[in-house]
Length: 435
Image 1 (cartoon, rainbow, N blue to C red):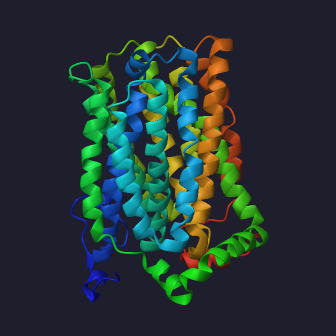
Image 2 (cartoon, helix red, strand yellow):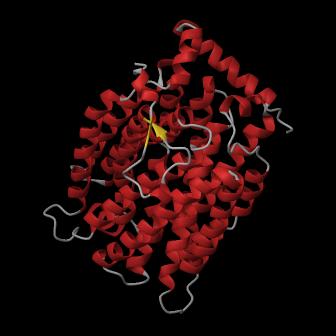
């Protein structure tokens, strides 16, 4: 599905204020692709945030012990292994076809989560949800990298991440009424599945990326599996520093950030004493501010560089979470969640974008999948360690601070990578590893 000549016509992005619009504008095709991908990320963000928001209610309902809460999420995050295999197939069958599968699979698994009756059933349904959801997120960043112009890729990455976390804001708005809904947290999953089914229907209009179509025309499908493996080996041989830098940055960031990021809604309720509706009153304005700044940060990264902005996000999130979990008796210290969340959004989005920008088209989905695998599994290990640290240090706050102390490793790895801002993907892929 290549579209028509009119698809290349530049348009104004009227659904964003001028300061947040992409530099250089968008074509009709680029806007359509971005919206079809972005809307899915919006509602996927809703789904992925329900567990963190409703953790106390889910714990009580399913009998999950306090020191096993993070371990439960660690088990769920093992879904990334299957998600990686699923994402790899996009380099063979195409981005569009696989994105149709992932969104529909996520919708079904999300709906099923609302009907579980035990912790093992909950874990199983959430594993299935995340198999499709993680593969979906990997591929969305690949599509954005391949479709957007060189001057707007940073903007696109930041805006895509913002939409994902706006979905978390929608989840928090629904969470405000969790004690009033007839089936509590279960209703949140059922509600979240409905827009996913609608997006799955709308996504029939999503075109295949032009860069993948070019690759597909060059070689037949029967030869793609062997060639993809050979290209991956060649990438590791020709760009070992680049691949290693991506994976170390993603792994260290995932290890450092995920316990702190997962536990903050529960910490607001259990340690700062906020009720569900009060958590929502903090998340909505704070999240909207973070989302707007993240879009601007993505656009700024097109000018000053991805590495600098991603590193700044790592620093900001670390400082914010130190304040949030530090246990200091300072009035309104819980507001430090806002810069922590902002830094997390910026760094998470730009690290994901870097992995898609720094490698050639033919195995971009594969490398993005590897980045995601390392980040998720590192986060799973960190979450598994949080339980024993909770028992040792007598609190989620001290445990989270111990784990976030590895963040400097991610910053060092990020600064070792080539800078892709403002450059065409083909030029970046041809750059020598030492440059």
